[in-house]
Image (cartoon, rainbow, N blue to C red; front, top):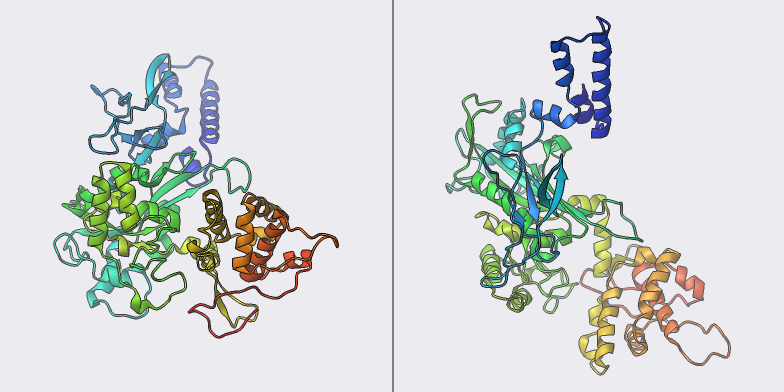
Length: 553
């Protein structure tokens, strides 16, 4: 009953502990009705009653096999250490000092990993920071033991028997990549005789455990999960059918390549599933056991997490695209002529990533990233993983959370009010680097920060008084000459003087002009114009390749 309350109804451990104590009390009162003296059997019965739901879970074998790793608390390291055990003791043993070396021949991290903890009067050393990683093998064994699931997963390959034909797709398996995906034997992955062949998507996302708050402290923890693409679409994303590998501890996201430490042991298991495969002693459909092969064929994350996971540089890098060789300098953000795009290849990624991993210092690594836009990723240890094809668009973020609209705002692409014109605005083109080289060094840095802020998706924030005040303060931190030059280059609308005798223009005036420019050109929201009585004439704009016709707002 208590297990059903926790698994089915989602009752907390504290609530389940209360239920167990009440059941224990009811049984004790029932036995005492036969007499005040308890027999040895009755005393043993009451003593064997569990007080913690975790003990009940262990009896039903509901708890997945997992490993508690010691994580280096150094924010620039995040190295993992697997525990060892002596003579069957349940007490894990970890190294006391982090010995990770970021570069071959370099210095060890040297950060302290453990701290003393008193457990039932015994002092043991426990990790300062932990990561709980669950076993993919153990989880898949449980999934294949559920009646009917294995048959559904095997039947999903039926569309591959007819071969790939361009046209309507109903599932990921109908796509060109999976229709042509070969296994370690060189044959199509679905051709395995009696073997089970299954493909999975890897999801990684970070979230604020305290809720998405605009103000106050911000924390971030991550979740790494796998979804079986061989399951029917209507059940594959149900929580009970997904594999949670682990929750990346906070309070902040691991920086850049440090995320690799959290994927190392998962990749180790996935390599076992690729070659030679993992044999299960028994499944729901195969009484005498079966060999199972599995592969990760797509990474589903938001844009920032996908680039960290697959090893791509930031979206602000010159190599802005993960699939082709388009660069900001050669193609820009408004070029949609696909015939000029050259696709990046798996070998190019591997060569660049291997160079990054073999670098001897941080300076060399930075030079490689600047040149190639690629870092090392643990996923590249999978012999079949192709970063140019396996990183896909995250439908949840782009469609359900409305980020497509935000991405178009970042690119400066929008339709006007009568839906007849698509306008492309490129801040970098309006304020090219050579236009402010005459400024002082600190003013040039100020201009770069200003351009970065203008390219940010701030339209929604400017509709609120708090957001408007936030960006007004951010613009005010820029130098006066920077603001004046930006207003001239962007042709920001001049605001009427607030006082009849006012002749001098101050920094606050240029800030208000830039805010008005943003609202007119990108957003179409006219609340700033109404506030300052600005004439509704649009500033200078560039019409891009996506424009349906010529015109203005």
